[in-house]
Length: 309
Length: 197
Image (cartoon, rainbow over the protein chains, first blue to last red):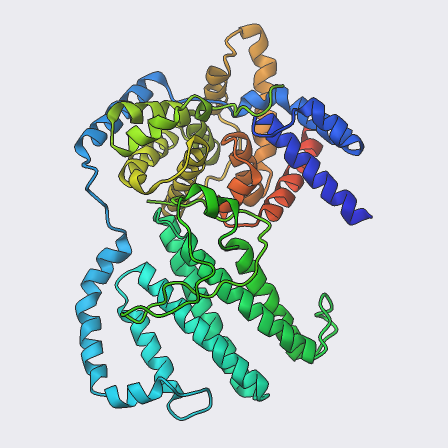
């Protein structure tokens, strides 16, 4: 009851503030009717309206004139074709020759590497497989390639996880999960970087969401088998704590990357991922779209193009 | 009060102004600056407490946006959130290089700035208004940096909770909780009788 009251209070304040800044569907007067139990709160916001002007200010006219002149001049001098490369890309251009050398060195080990690709957790060549994956991430030329590779490797870990879980190999489960987390975090970092650079990330974000949802399903299966009680992390054993913590972490990332199906990703970006298409590697070994699980995101995803240039 | 209408320039910015801005039309950029510079400047001024720095940060946002505008998709409302996202990154860089402002008192420049923008020029009213504004600014300074940021993005930027959530990398629920705590603190501080000095 108290939680419900708290939620209503949060919602009433949020809608009242939306009304205050002119962004809500209802006026403050209408909110008094909508939230009769929160009338005091709404009236408080109403009283803030009088002092709201304290937040309004503007650049001095002479400064404004200077800024506008500089901006217009910059616009005239900026060709639409000029694209400022993100710092990372410039850095990578420098690092690329070094990375190419690393690839050449790895070619010497090619038969072993090829053999390692089919190895499974616990097998002798599994470490080589992971090392080669890390090398592929290292030589990726930009954040998008990086993100796709991380997602591809994370989905491989999920497949391996199903096998080791079925066989009850607890040491390998930990190892595989740890590597999964590393790739999922890597993918999220690259996606955030792309978003901050103003790139459209809705498709990558959806792929990440699909991988995470699958991961949560596997974790929940494990938690059920271990008879872990959700919301009772303190009382459970260390395995349960670890599992519930991992579920919570993945859910948090999912909150930030709810994937396609959200309003922003569907409508505003003009970009549509392919949620129904299974992920398949391209000629370059990169996934084009990972399997999308059923999802009902509750919050919209980040706006396409929103981010720091 | 009229709802549905943002109290800012985004409502006056025509959709095609963004298309023209993407083609680097100088006049479109002047319109974009006119529409959003006040909100950004107010946000920066409250954060850095220095007029020149706030002006530089404001100008920087538009110059940076000019370079990246071709990658932007959306309308005026999304554009505002995008500009604030750029602004917040620049502000974080600024704080990283120069350190955060430790506010010990409300300086005259700030109140003067706010009076100029708020249109209070009547000397008879100004003493009381200054007192109110100084109290509000002081109350905002007493908030945690997270709460202060949410309040300023909410009231200076006119942004909604989901928009702020995307900008600051939190969930909308977390933003709502932060703003609730912030407004409870503000309400408590502002309802207390002013201290005699």
